[in-house]
Every structure is written in C-alpha cells, then in structure tokens.
Length: 361
Image 1: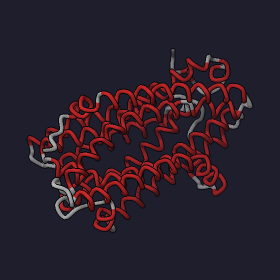
Image 2: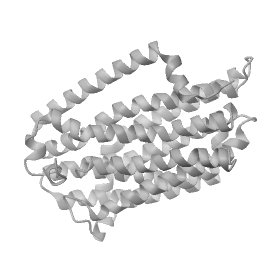
Image 3: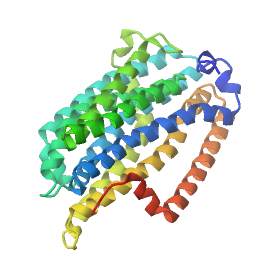
C-alpha cells in the first residue's frame, strides 16, 4: 500500500475494513512502543554486566522521573493527535493544524522545565524515589547525563503521536527504531571499551534520543494532510486546553505508574535493609522485572494508540458505528495479548528474566 493511500482523508479511513486499519496503524505503534521500552531494558542488561546490581538499582531510582516526563509528553502529544484526527474527520484541517503547533511549543517548554527541575532538585528527587546511601552516587552520575536527553525524549514522544495521527505510523516507528539501534550499539562500546559505566549507558541513550528527535523533526516537510505554517505555533489557550483535556487519560496512567514505582522503591529500601540481601538487591531485582513488564505494556498500549487516528477521524466524521466497532475490536485484541502475556509470565518467569542475562548476585 502506497504512502498516499493511507493519507488520513477521503474514503480510506472511513470505508476500509477496521481489522485492516488496526493492523496498518497499530503494528508500527506496537513496534515503536516495544523499541521505546527496550531503551531501559538494554541499559539494564549492559549496566548489569558492566557495573553490577548496584548500577541496576541506581538506574531504577531514576526511572520515576523518566515515566513522569513521558506522561506529560503524552498529555500533549496524544491530546494533540486526538484533536487533529477529530478535526480531519470534520474536514477542518486548518483548526486541527493549530493543535499541532500548540503542542510543539508546549513540548519544547515542557522539556526545558523538566531539564531545569531535574538539575535543580536532582538530589532530593532521587532520595524521594528510593535512592540508598550505596547507590546515590551512581544514580547521580546516571541522572546528570540522561536528563540532558529529556527535552529530546519528550519532544519525540509527543511528536510521534502526531505523526501517527497524520497517517504515517511507519515513519514514527522508523524514528524510534533508529534511535534504539544507536543506543544498543553504543551501550557496550561506552561501558566496556571506554569503561564509562552508567555514564556510558546514559550517554548512549541520549545520543539515540537525539537521533530520533532529528528524524522526527524532518517530518515537518512531509505532513500529508496539512502544510505546516509558522502561524500555527502561536499559542491559543482554548486549543491548548482542549489538547490537555483529550490527553489527560495518558497522563493519569503514567502518574499511576510513577507512584507505584516510587512506593515500591521506598518499601524495598526500608524493608530490604532488614533482610540478608540489603536494600539494593531487591530494588535492582524489581527494577528488572518492571523493565521487562514495560515490553508487554508497550504492546498493549501500542495496540490502543494505533487505533486513535481511526477512532478520532470517524468520530469527527460522525461515523459513530465505526468508532464503536473499532473500540471493541481494540479491546478484544488487547485482552488476548494481555492473557497471553499473563500466561507466559506465570509459567516461564525464569526464562524471561534469563533472557536479560543480568547477574544479580
């Protein structure tokens, strides 16, 4: 199928079989989400071998800030994508384009805010996230570098949602994959050859995120349904509010995950200290499990967000039957995947953890 044939508009998204549409949009999203999850998993693998469980524990206490940043990114990116899809369905492309411009400006501002807050309150944040006296110095080394990539990570995550809504899920997937490949290649080089430890892993991640950001920025000249103009970058309070309203559910989900990680880390820190293992080994072990679980979550979330352009467009076009049919089909597919994942995790936990080849003891 040609690129032009999946342009959001005309009769394609209104009349094509829903199953085929979900496959076309969700598969690249699933791959992109899994690749995004692999950023953290790859870091854990190489840090586990190159630094040890203390390194794994240290990177895990920085993870809540990453999840939080991603949540606010999705608040703007998913919100703008939903708004854009609805307006395309209403045949009001001009107004939909303003949502993209507003989201871009807000994503840049958000990235700078997270960068500033992270640097100013780094110590306090890490202690509140469950850092211990053993891993705090390593966590700081990791955080000081990885936070440089936050503006790129936030921008990419938000913009990729918009790219998918424009009918280019394959392009969004490519941007994520190329960044992840660079991360995978550079991780062992920086950790083992240059002996940079967690700093090397963080640097590899930042470089990968920067590459993904550059590729995503190139899409501004490739929009299929609009011709992007500078005037779209002018902030409109009403449009911004609508974006945030539509993206609020994504933020709430990430906030819940953030709270769970923080509470878990602090409980493991306090109660682990009373065990023969100490605090760092339990934090490291649970962190590894969380990173593996992120892969399954990436598949389920990818299925869901892949359906967003289909639902948004048909909602705007008032094709409510197709909206409902798409919604229920997405639920069925996500439920089947979740059940399969549950069974695999229950019956083959050792095999799953062993694939990470991370030495805890």
